[in-house]
Image 1 (cartoon, rainbow, N blue to C red):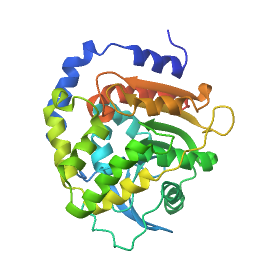
Image 2: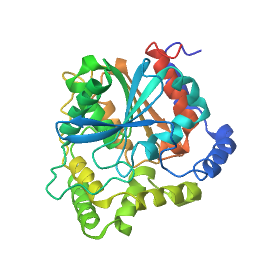
Image 3: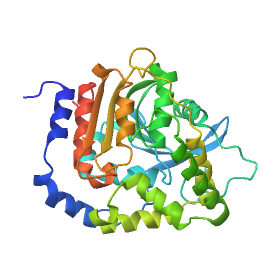
Image 4: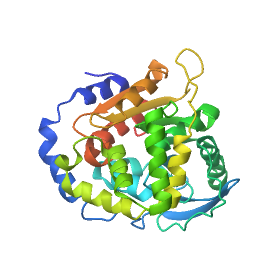
Length: 325
C-alpha cells in the first residue's frame, strides 16, 4: 500500500479511468449546463486597494480558518474558474477546514467596466505583488495557493519572493518560461482583435484551445457550449490587457540545483491540454522531494472534466502537508 502522499498521487495518476467513465459523463453532461458561470452568492465580495488599483476578492468560509488563495486563468474569473469545482460534493470536507479567498485579476470580474485607455496593466510580477495587499487586508499570515494557467504563474512568482508566506502550492497548467515566438505572434493578433473588434471567432477559438486542448467538441458538447457562452461575455478590452501581461511574462528564473520554489508543489495538467510540456519543464526545475506531477487522462480542462480525480489529489496532497486529517 502507498505510504506517502507522492505514492498516493502516483497511484492516482496510474489509475485507469475506465471504471469512472459513466460517472464522469453524467457529471459532464448535466453539472456544468445547469448553471451559468457566474457567482452563486456563496462568496462575499470585497474590493481590496493595492498600489496598482483596486481588485475584487471573493471570500467563502470562516475567516478564522486556514486560508486557500485562488488565482484564475485567462478569459475567466473566480466564479467561472473555481466555483463549480468547490461546489463538487467531494470538496465539501475540504471547504469545512479552510477559508477560500478568490483573487480576481484587475478588470476580469463579472460585469467589470472597461479599464481606462491610459491604464497601464500590471506585469505578472506586479500582479503577484498585489497578493501582499490581499494578505494585509484580511489579516492572513500564510496561505495555500491554488492557481490555474496565468494564475498559477502569478502564485509561483509570489512563492519565489515570499516563501515564508506560502504553505504549499496546487498549480494547474503552470508555465515557468517566457513566451515563445509562436505564442507571442498569435497572442498579439488576438489582443489587437479583442481591442478593436471585441470577442472575435479567432479569439474565441484560441481561448477554447488554451483551456480544453484537442478534440473539445468530441468530449462534451454541453461543456463546450457553456464556456463559449462564458467567453463571449468577457470584457474584451480588459481581457486583451491581461493576455498581453501574460504574454510579456519573464522566465521564473528557477533551477532545481539553485533558486527554486521552496514549498511543496502539486503540479497538475490534463493529457489533452496544450500545456503538458510546460508542466514537464516546470517540474524539471522544482525540487523532486517537494514536487508531485500529476497528468490526468482523457481531459484538457481538469477541474471541469475530471473533478473527482482532482479533488482526490487535492485531499491527498493536503494530507501529506499535514492538513485535512
